[in-house]
Length: 316
Image (cartoon, rainbow, N blue to C red; front, side):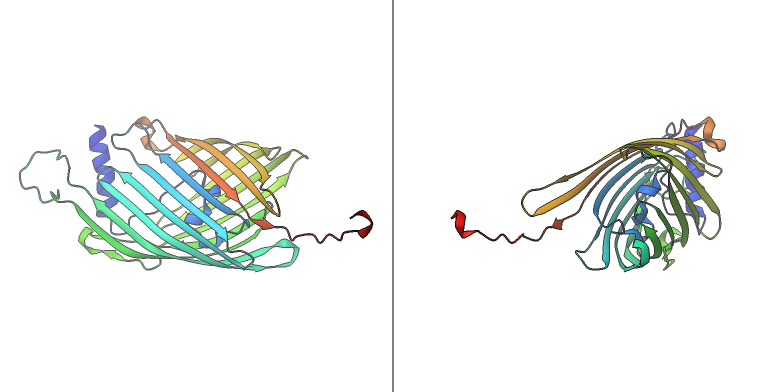
C-alpha cells in the first residue's frame, strides 16, 4: 500500500507541468539565503550552515533533503556574498541546486540596512528507472525504463530590510527564468516568498522571536508561522505552524564567544537546532512525522589598530 501511495505522489509531482520544485524547511528562519539572496551577510558575519531533513518518516523512500549555505560580508565593502548547495532524494527523483548569491547593502539611519540581491546557478533533476507497475503489463508506455536527467539555468532575486537582532522583512523570487525541462515534460515554476520577523524583549534574559513566511508557486499559496523564546542568548524553544501540513515544536542552543590573540579579535557563534513536524494533513495515517536538524557556525574578523606607545627616557 505504501509503495502505491509513493507512486501516486511521484506521478502527481512529475505529470504536472508546473509542479513545485523548491524544498521546505521548518527552521527556515535560520537559512534565508537559500531563497533570498539579499540575506547573505546581512548579519555582518560569515556564517556556514548545514541542514538535514527527513520528511514524512514511515514512507518507503521518503524525501531526504540536505542543504549547505554560506553567507558573509566582503570586508568593509557594502557587499554580501553567498553560496547554496542543495540535494534532495524523493523516491525515483533526485534534485540538485547550485547557486551563488550577491547583494548590495545600503546603510540607513538607526542601524537599518536595505539589501538588494541576485542569485544565479543551475538546477538538475534526475529520474530513475526502477519503477514498480501496479499491473504487470509488458511494454507499459507510462513507465520509463531509462534514467533521464535535465539541467537548467537558475536565477533569483530578493530585497530585505533589517535591523540586526531586532526585525527584518523581505520579498524574493526563485526560478525566474521558468525553464522547460523538455525531456521530462516539466516546466520550472517561479516561486514567490514574503517574510518578516520581530524580536520582543520580554525581560533582561528572555526574548520572544516571531517569524512569518508566505510562499507560492503562483498556483498555490501557503504560509508558516513561528514563535520561539530565547533565554539568556543561549537556548531557545518554540513552535511552528504550516497551514494544512504540520505543527512543529522546535528547540535549539547557541553560544557566542570572542577568540584570537594580538591585534585580531574574532567574534564567533555556534547554533544547533532541531524540529519535529507532526503531520496534520491526510497522510498523517501513513507518516510518523518529519525530523530536521541544523548546525551553524558564524565568525567575523575584526582588526584592532595598533596602539602607539611612547617610551619615557627616565625609565630606559
